[in-house]
Image (cartoon, rainbow, N blue to C red):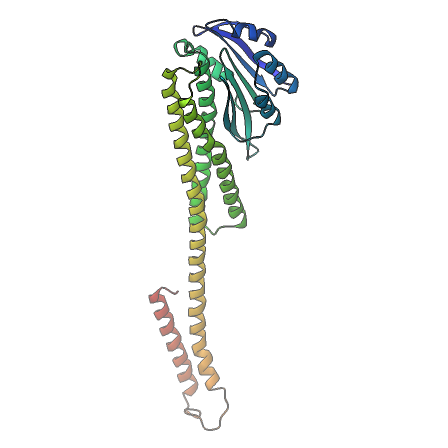
Length: 323
């Protein structure tokens, strides 16, 4: 069972009175008045009641009952039905709260499903700006859309900080399995954010073109401003996804470089150790007639040769950067 967060009548930019759901339709038909109803987790009974009162289209009600559709704007005669999603993070996991908006001449109905930032903040802002609230339903629609978009900005800033931390870690140490999984989770979250943000640009552009009785032309620049804001969000999402891809690419390149350095060191030490092994192998063949075999200083001479050769090889590899 849902609950009514707020239901009130407005006229000339000011709140007239609070009302019950059953009183709304009468007020919505009075010239110069409109009803703003806010619901939280409404059930089929509440939505069916609203459909009967405000003559909502049956397809809009069907979509509202199904839920979990993509963000969209649909028109039914002189009425609008919008589906929006606000991002939230619960225990570090990205989730989305669905909001449905019904708007027509004389009424705006918002239905929020889940625990996102309450729309009471939007109502307070609108009531504090009577000159704009005087425009009526279209300004309330703009304010609700703007509030949904505001929820994306802190989320993107949070992801930006996380990606910057990961980029810093990549240069300090090798990528672990946990790091790669975290980056992949971030990439998936960014893709989900983009999937729910992209349609908002189309919605804002469509609202600029609609010729509805309750949408005044003076409000078109406000919806255009929302479209610009959405474009910026999409650009930032693209940058963040590139940062995630870049973190993986840089991590792989650095890991390859570290492995190459290690392999060069192993190769250099193997070459140094190969020299005394080769000399010792030659003099370990046990032939009777070998040069310097009976020389009094032969043992010391071979040790000196081995030492000189190893030091020479070490200095050569050190100079070339292999050690």
